[in-house]
Image: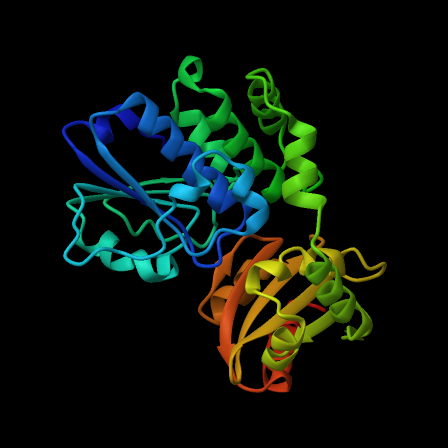
Length: 317
C-alpha cells in the first residue's frame, strides 16, 4: 500500500530519518535522498538523519557530512521515518528516537518486514528502498543531489542492475534520475566498484580461506576479530565480499561472516535463486530478501556454520 508523503508530513515540524545498522548503499542512498529533498522542500522544518558511520565511498553524496551518529539527550521528534529497516531493533542507536516519536513511518522492501511503524509503506517486490522513495516524491522537484543519492541506492541493491530484483520500472526510474544530470558512471565507479587497498586485502583473504561444503553447492568464508584488527578493517570494508563469493561456479548459496565480538558473528547469506535465504535468516532472528539476507549469531565459527548448514539442508542443499 502506498502513501501520500505530504499527508504524513502535515503539521509535523520536527522530523528524523534513520536506517539499519551497518548502513549499505541503499540505506544511505534512500536516507540521504529523502533528507536532501525534505531539506529543500520544507526549509521551515527541523530535519535530521541518524545513521551509523557512513562508508567513506558514500561521502561523495551531498550532505553525507550532516549525518548524525549519536542522539542528543531527551530529544523527541514529531515524526520518525525509518528507511530500509526490517524491524525497530535494526535501527541500532537511533531506536530510542523511533520509540519516542509522536508518529512513525516505515519505508522498506524487506520481505521479512512486519509493518512495525504507525504507518508502513512496504513493497518486497521493489528493487530497493531508494526506488520506493522516488515513487513518493514530486518528480519535478527532485534536484541533482537527491537524484544522485537515490541512484546510488538503486545501483547497490540491484548489483548495478544485474540482480533479479531489477524490473522494467527500476530501469525507467534510473533513466529519469540520469535525466536530472547525474554522472551515473562516476557514482557506480566511486561507490560500488572502487575499493581501498585494505578492502582488497581483506577480500583476498576471504576468498583464499573460503571452503566449499554441502556437496560443493555452498561456499563459506569467515573473518575473525583478530584478522579484522590485523588488516585494520572496519565492517564497512567487508561490503561486497559475500556477493563475490556467490559468483563461484556451481554454488547455490554463499555464506560470509565476520566476528563482531568474541564468538559473536554477523552472517550474510546470498542465493542464486534456488534457496530462499530470507527464511533461513528469519529462523535465526534476522531477515532480508529471498536472495540476500542476514542475521547475528553467538558461538564459534564452526557452531554458526553447522547451524546454518542444518537449515540449508532442509531447503534441499
